[in-house]
Image 1 (cartoon, one colour):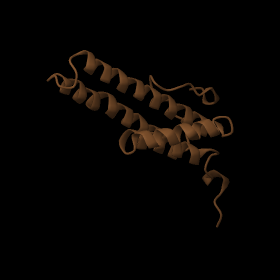
Image 2 (cartoon, rainbow, N blue to C red):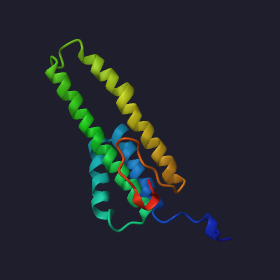
Image 3 (cartoon, helix red, strand yellow):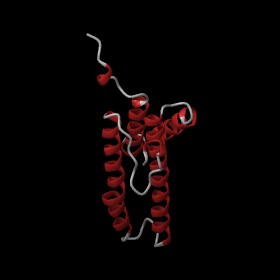
Image 4 (cartoon, one colour):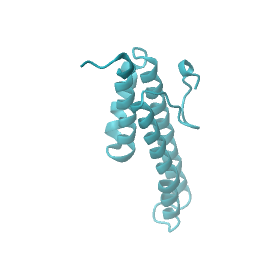
Length: 135
């Protein structure tokens, strides 16, 4: 029996899930490769996809860029405060992974869950607005 209209996936849900999965892959498995693929998807699809996909693409690209910026700032702080040979470097590394990196992973997991549910999601602090959904 074919699915009813109520059971159909919302337009753009597959791309939204792909964007969130690439974001998490960028954070945990293949950092540069997944980021390049995510940016390519955003570049190719940003104007052609339904609002749900556009919202998730914008969120993941924004969060990825903010995550990269935070990583650069942390590395600059490490270098300015004595380099990688100083004993205090582990304080920054552990704090970064415990607080910042895990927060980005948590946000990505929530975004993936919302994409799988066919709903929009705006990342707190680092997300872009989604005017189509009032976010």
